[in-house]
Each structure stands twice: as C-alpha cells, then as structure tokens.
Image (cartoon, rainbow, N blue to C red; front, side, top):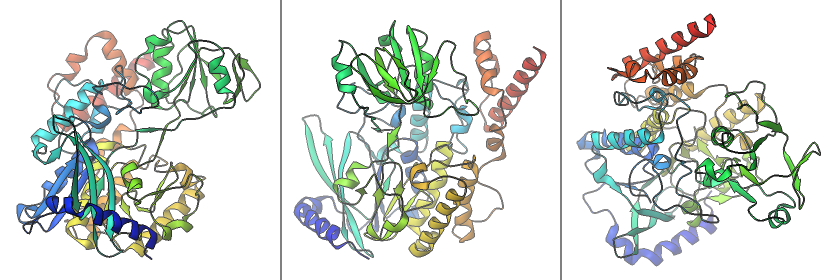
Length: 512
C-alpha cells in the first residue's frame, strides 16, 4: 500500500525542482539511469559489476557514482580537514590503523593485493589497492568526487517512478547545487559514519569539575599521545576499542576497560596493566561510578560504542523513517525504517522491500557486519546489477518478505533479537551468506550454474588459521617480512603463504 503522505511530499519536492531536473534528466539514448552513492569498496564493486555487462546491454544505461570526498577509499581515505565535535569526521581513520584481518580475505575475487603488501597492513595499502582496482577497471570516468548527495526523493508510486537526487558539489568557486533523476539508487555509503554517543547521568557536572576532562567518541580518536600520563577509561572492546586500548596503554598512566560483559574467549589479549571494569553507571563531580558501585577519578573517557545505521539523504527525502524503539516486523507495510541498529525491510540485507517505491528501485551494498567486505560487496553487487538488468533476478516482494520473516525467526531461535543484532551475521556465516546470494541468481537462471560456490575454499580456510596473526607479528619482529612476501602475487600464492605461516607459527609455539 502506498504511503500517501510520503507520496505527496515527494511529488511536491519533485515539482519544485523540475526546472532544474530537466537539465539533468536522462536523454532518449538512455534506457535506465543508475545512481550509486559512495566510492568505498562497496560502491566500487557495484560500479565495476555494472560495467561488466556487455555494451549491448549497459551501453544505454546512464551510470553515475557520487562521493562527497576527493578520491576513492571510503573510510580508508584520510581526511584532509580534521574536525572537532559536534561536527562529524569524514572517516574514523586514525594514523596507526592496521587491518585486523589478513589482506587476502579483503580482496575482490581475481584481483589480489600487489606483491610486497604486508599480510596485516596499514590503511595506506588498502586505499592504494582500491585506487588500483578503480584504475584497472576504468571506473574513474563514472565517478563524481566532491559531490555530496543531500536528498533523494521518490517521485512516483509503488509501481513506477524515479528518484529526484539533489547534491552539492564544489566547482572551485564555491558550493553549487545539482540535480539528477535516477531509476535505480544504490546506497554504498558505509556503516562507520554516525557515532552512537552514550550519555551518562552526571557527566556534565564531572566535565565541569576540572579543566582538561574529556568524553570523546572513538570516531574522533587519532593519536594516543594526547592521553600521555593520563588515567583513561575506554568503553567497549570492538575493533576501534581494542586498538585504542593497545595504543593508549603504552603512554597513559593507567587504562581501564569498561565492558557490558566479559567474553568467554577474548579475540585479542588485553595489554598488561589494563584493568577491566563493568559498565559505567553515572558520574559524580569527582569521578566515574560503575555498576558494581566502585568509583575512579579519571581524566578522560574514550567511548568506542559503535555507530548508528543512518542514511541522512534518504531521511531528508522522506524515503527512510527513524524510530529507535521498533522491534517488530509489523511495520513492514509502513515503509523503510531504521531503528539505528537495523534498516528494514530489506531482502538479504540488500534490496529494499518498501511499498512506497517501485520494486528494485533501491538497494544497499555493504550493510552486513562480521564479513569480508570486498568479496561480499562483489556478491551483493552481482545480485543488484542483475536485478537492474532483469526483474526476474529477485523474487516478488511478498515472497521476499516471507523469506525475511523466516530469517528473523531463525535469529530469534538462535537467541538473537534481529532488531538489536541488526546486520551482524551470526555463527561465522559470512561465506555461506555470499554463496547464498550468488546461488540465488544461478537457481533463477540469471547467471550460468557452474556448480561452484562463489567463495573459494582458500578463503574459507582462513578461518581455520589460529596461529597466523601471531606468526605475522613474529615475522615482523624478526625483520623477515620481505622474505615471506617476495614473489607472492597470485591468489594461489597468497593462500599458500597464509597456510605456511600458520603451520610455521604452530610448530614454533609447540616447541616452546
């Protein structure tokens, strides 16, 4: 059922901009217009997959990728102009960032990292890899940098229509506003932009109690030196929290780690001297009080409390509602919604099932978490590209909604609330998820069924290598990284390196 209120708003917005939109509308030579937002690994995968179609198919498509930044890379591209609260940085990237997964797992299929790339490299290698990928496949001519999409309005109904896209761009003399019409909108703008900021009772009084006190979200974290000789509480132990604890503990007077619960098995060991504390309860003028009633006098709080699922340009165009309290699929008939953890209803975390726009008009690349991004982006992009080319590539909205409801019920049986869990995959199902997305296209006869899974066995084997990361650390400490990396160019050679390294470290630890 069409949301009449949204349709009226969309139509009014569209009419107001029409005199500009005519200048940007597809001409008669184009049969489809496709807009992609984001030039990180997801947007690049989407653009490349569309361009993989033969010219006889995509030659009549108008394809444009918008990105608000100056180059490809997404979160891996350093910001040119650092900002402070309340402004939000373009990226949470910090100078000492290294990958926490081996680079072969982060590659687009068939496009390995260059010889000599460290197995767990710094961020510069990832941005360079993405730039090389874009150049190799001729993606740059289709990308519009320094173009920030500000609003996307659906003008139409549940069957037909187009997106009115408003963007701002810099032309060297200032910011200008532009418009574009698109039949299909693909959102690949990433997950780590809008910090989930926690507020505790009494924190304002504590901040006022002494000069230099600070509560900061990890999106603003850049260097540990600012915490030299200070007492710091880091809240959360995800990827950014782990790095912050490791780096800050080397220079701080004392570091405490505040956790909701202590995991049965630590993914990464806690640095020596770091003390575990429960969740923060509140602040007094003198210090922080935890849930066990213990208290501390500290200098700074670094809050590694994650990010919220927001897409501001969809919200401004009334295409996405926000309700942090929703935990039910009864809202499926009301429109596309985010509760800041979960964006729904989506088919396989990708295709919007919102009844307020045409089927297959809106898709998302890169929402799943706990998955290897680049190959997953490739699988999702295959689904979206073929969906754009052939409406039979995906099931009907009703069938897709039933599948979504079944998946959410599966999560509940496993002990997870899907509306809290969000797009985090469970039980290490990342490879199975990718295989399932591509298998759908094969089963529906959209692409040839070659009988092979999408995820190569060597990628699955990476999950078994328990000694590899410690092995690479020892390789770097011994100064022999160049010897290990010499001549490693192909996927087969990278796979062999990881296997040998894991066995090498296992034998070393067994002999100690």
